[in-house]
Image (tube, rainbow, N blue to C red; front, side, top):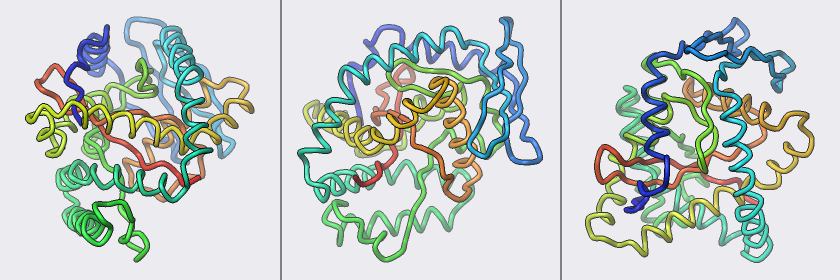
Length: 298
């Protein structure tokens, strides 16, 4: 949805512009025969050449030329999560009935259907787009506005799509790894897709913006952030507690996750990671927007 004053956050627009410019300088990833990312890069600064272990036991050559800066932002994000998201999520999980939490997650996912449908059409997946439209219609009617996932109970499962994935389908490389303040793991391609384009595909968010419904806008934004994070907080804590290098673990998980989403592969058996985005609809080309993933049931 829209956060009208979002662009007042210090430095966010600078980060977006920075990422867009560097996306043209960063190399595309090369996929090895076993399906893993192998990247080398040089963008005028020293490129990180560290190798990170990934879940299937092989190694991943990272493309993280901004690693020192990324690690600083990563620690800043961890501070926010420790101070706010983790305690709020713990309270939410312990005090809100699981059925209610699932209903909230279903409702929020249903709201994102237009973004998914348009990206599926842009990817040439007309049949899948019609399927997603059917799922949204079923859940919006029989599911009481999307609170119940009736379509899912009937065995009809949809996918999450965003413009970053659409760019990937058309061969746009991910570029280098980037950690955004608050939003976390990303790359130049996904910054352009999620933050500069997807908001224009959200008719509900744009309608709320036009009507200046700021109370609803902020309420939905808060619901999305809390519901998403609460669904992964336990698994995320386990990854943090068992990782030798938590930053490198999150980096590897994010890149594997995005690769799988772009290829529409089967679900990877990977721990969830924070992928926070609050569906902000842009008021102009200088403001950004996004997508959200449905949390796992507790």
